[in-house]
Image 1 (tube, rainbow, N blue to C red):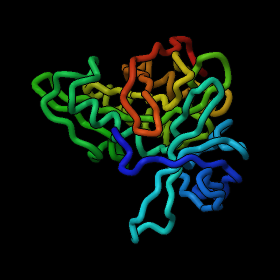
Image 2 (tube, helix red, strand yellow):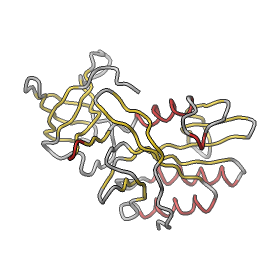
Image 3 (cartoon, rainbow, N blue to C red):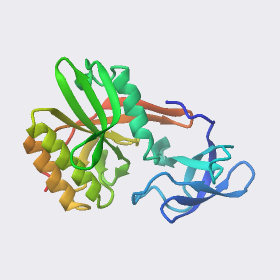
Amino acid sequence: MRFQTPLVPARLVRRYKRFLADMVLEADGREVVAHCPNPGAMLGLADPGMRCWLEPNDDPRKKLGFGWRLVELPGGHMAGIDAGLPNRVVGDALRAGRIAPLAGYETVRAEVRYGKASRVDFLLSGKGGQAYVEVKNVHLRREGDWAEFPDCVTARGARHLAELSDMAAQGHRAVMLYLVQRSDCARFRLASDLDPAYARAFDAAGAAGVEVLAYGTRLSPEGIGFGDQMPVDPAPQA
C-alpha cells in the first residue's frame, strides 16, 4: 500500500489529547499540528525530538493538513503509528491470496456484523465454510526482537477475543491476526503485564479453538507492505 502523498520528515514536539501532535517540519522549520491516528499509549514512539514522517493533505474536509504515519527508530528501523492502516494492508493481502493460512476463500467481506454488538474485520467465505478474522495493530517493543500487544488496557480487544471464541464454539473458523508495524521485531507475544484481563481472554480464546497469526510489515516513507509471518509465543499468557 503506497501513501497517497509523499511523506515529509519532521521532529516531534509533543503528542497531546491522544489524536494531536505538534511537529516541526525539517524542510522549513514551521511548527504544524498533525493528526495522530492512534488512540493507544504509543510507548517509546512519542518521545519529544523523535524524527517522524508526515503525510500532507490538501483535503478541505480535513481540519489538519498533516497526518502522522511513521517514526524513525535506532539502527535505521521504522515503526508505523497509524492504527487504521493494518486493516487496509491485511485486506489487500487477503484479496491477493498472500496470506497462506487464509488463502482459498472465494469472497472477502469487510466490517460484517457478528456477535452481540460488533463488526468482524473480515469474513471469508467459500466451499469450506467461513472464517472470522480480526486484525490488531502492533507497534510495541520493549525487549529483544519481541513485538508485543497490547500497549495499554483494551477492553474492546478482550471483547473481540470473546466473540471469536463464540464463533469457534459454533463450528466456524476464527482467527486473530496481529500485524506488526515495526521493522526491528521478528517474534510476537502478549504484553500480559500491561493488560492481564486481555491475556486471560487470549488464553481462553486459544482453548476455544481461535487461531493466532502474526505478520510483519515492510515500512518506508513510500508505503507499507505486507511482510513475513512471525512465530507466536506459545506459552500461556495469563
